[in-house]
Length: 100
Image (cartoon, rainbow, N blue to C red; front, top):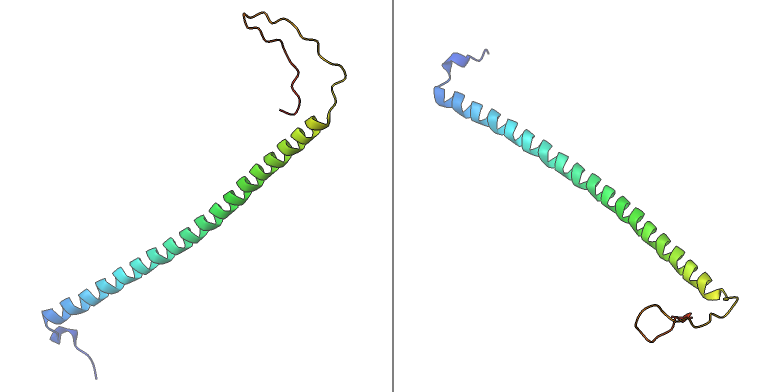
């Protein structure tokens, strides 16, 4: 049994063409959706990586600063500073401050 395409009406051709065009659109939208999901996943991984690196950097800076301040608090000044007259018009002398 041979199928004769010349026996089809124009409406049937339009219907088949519309289904083919719809299938092409569905394939394009599905590919775009998959690409979007992949990109969102990749950007999420990149965001968590940047967040971890910056968090580690901030933690390292805070740790270094804390160590520096702790070490500076342990240092003893070898001599007492003598009050000096300041060159300004103020009446306060220079003072070595501790634990401030």
